[in-house]
Length: 112
Image 1 (tube, one colour):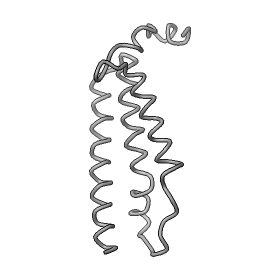
Image 2 (tube, one colour):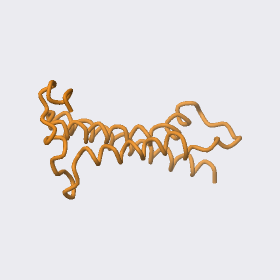
Image 3 (cartoon, one colour):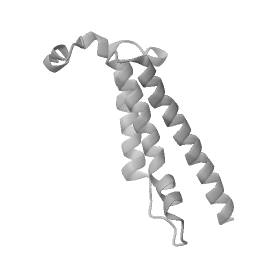
Image 4 (tube, helix red, strand yellow):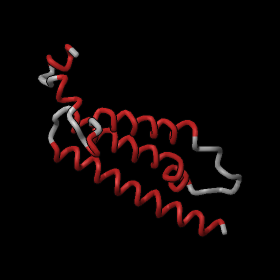
């Protein structure tokens, strides 16, 4: 807590209500948990057929990166940072998620 005060952030700011009345700090923690799940638990070994390297990178790592971007956005909002920066992180996460979905659709279509 002392580090927050020294940084100019009052501890009460970190618990200001965010989305659905839940503090942004809690949302950030939830996003980090989901990112950890998509980084370590969910990605099973890829199938034996060859997948181009960039596509494999997108399919295996971008979903976790989306959640990290959302966590960063929530942390910025929790710390009373510039809302514009938080919006940039959230919008970048949206773009990355759309890239992930598009790549997933293409990959599924090529498999069948």
